[in-house]
Length: 244
Ligand SMILES: C[S@@+](CC[C@H](N)C(=O)[O-])C[C@H]1O[C@@H](n2cnc3c(N)ncnc32)[C@H](O)[C@@H]1O
View 1 (tube, rainbow, N blue to C red):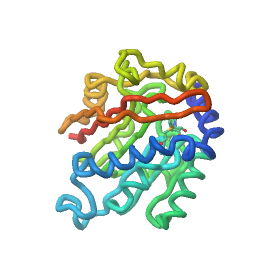
View 2: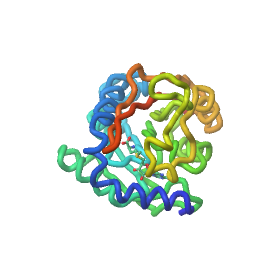
View 3: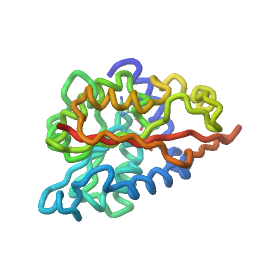
View 4: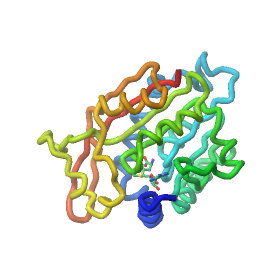
């Protein structure tokens, strides 16, 4: 694990227990937007013509407690959550269990962006995917371009990639300045990229062979966050494309 990734691991290991409570409003909104956009994200679900009679499998990378996994679990056969933080994976598996989803939703601690392949069981769980998703984590990756390339390789042909992240240089109130470092002061050292524009995402997807049906949407409502000192909001996008 690189030093930067290790910094992220430590930071999120410490945050894991309080994460869900601290970001409850944002998590609710991401869940609602994801379910609402399900057929925009992919056409392969257990209840759609394209997914019928198939074992639809999704990976949520950098899953944290797994809000996207738990929201989409009813529509797939198998969900794999992977995160570098053990404590986040413990939260993920606890959430799956309390929702009665442990038979199809399983979390593993691993670094899928490292040079070395993960353990064999994780490697085989994370191949032949129909959907790979990364929510609010691409800005924490040291090399987002490499990350998307590696993750896209795990998709079946025509499989979809769904990304949620912060819009580049978007101030909470339209003043054109993204104050991420100040607002998440304690997290500044874990952030590599201060958001992604439409063009950034198109380039990242194309570089990973995700060239079919690219779309990027800015969500109409910003995500709201509160810390002990202040409340603020962040403009967020969702983007999708399929592997050629
Ligand atoms: C802001 S949280 C987002 C969690 C969740 N996806 C969500 O939307 O609530 C960022 C997550 O990315 C994970 N993370 C950061 N860098 C990572 C990396 N290189 N590989 C895997 N996970 C990583 C952290 O451990 C943390 O769980």
